[in-house]
Image 1 (cartoon, protein in one colour):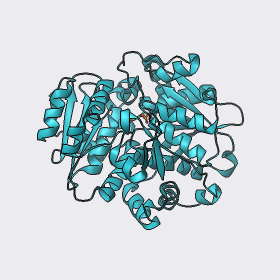
Image 2 (cartoon, protein in one colour):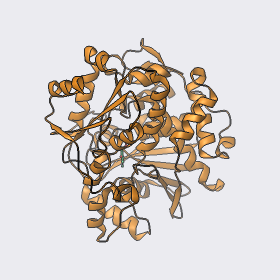
Image 3 (cartoon, protein in one colour):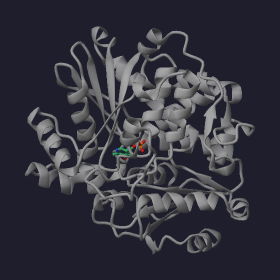
Length: 425
Ligand SMILES: *Cc1c(COP(=O)(O)O)cnc(C)c1O
């Protein structure tokens, strides 16, 4: 697989280089130079998740990794399913939260850990990542205890749910967590600063695990196929997928699945009040506002990092961005949507509820809708319980960590302090 830097097209890298480097020069994202459609999607849809995902990833990655290696990595990474649940006649929920940290980030995080373990060799590396809540947990659990890999995770202090925080800030060992006294965009900017610092990069073998890492995106392509594989055959023709979006990695992966030949009719990009993209799709002005805290905190992103990849994909496919559905919900509207879903017999959480709401509003007669349920409802226990007025309990993964002590350091959004921490880590 060859990739180029969207900002500096002359920078061309292999899959391995792209995985290890994370970002290209001038903070440019890597993008595949060709996306060859899969030969027989219907045959793939008959296979099980691991077999099919191995085939898709091998097709994309090419001979840099043998088919056996890829299937070994995939079977270690994807040890849980992605079931669809029917919510109404034409609407299905795709549940992406059955991994160890109860959010879709487990798919990408765990496959990325496999890639870095494979490509890493004996040199010690540091994974630096910013999280709006769920990436951090997935990355921390995927790398916890691996030799030669240190992980440093930045998150916005007080802006993620208490249980999200417990899930990854209580591990210790090779996992360092830092609560930044600012918002997610500030955390993301600090990570970018670190990647611009050549001396630091060399000294600590810096790598990133954000959704900007191509290995994470490729892994996420696979569950779109898994959703189709479970749909009744007569419902596969006019499928609309609604994606609750923050940094826009999930939607990028969906669009890549479509480019590989999965017959998705169209997508809806659903956001909370951090609606830079819906506004941009409406009026063509890229005008990020200050990030605001919402109920769907993993989407509190006003400068979505993956957006340039989506633009690039539409450009190379010769398609217009006007094909992309869009919509945003306020917190008050999110509460209404979550209650509506609960009344329909499906317990959800704010992120999934936003995608559901936009799907119900935009789905047309004869279409089948899938909305992505990106996290387990219990990850947002406090808000879900207060909105629905009932107790929803805790799954074991969370109950086990709920009483552990938080080990995070605190820091202002000051790169010099982060640099010092990284150098002495
Ligand atoms: C990360 C996350 C999102 C946003 O996904 P992107 O790929 O960043 O758009 C949505 N919901 C949950 C629960 C998340 O953790």
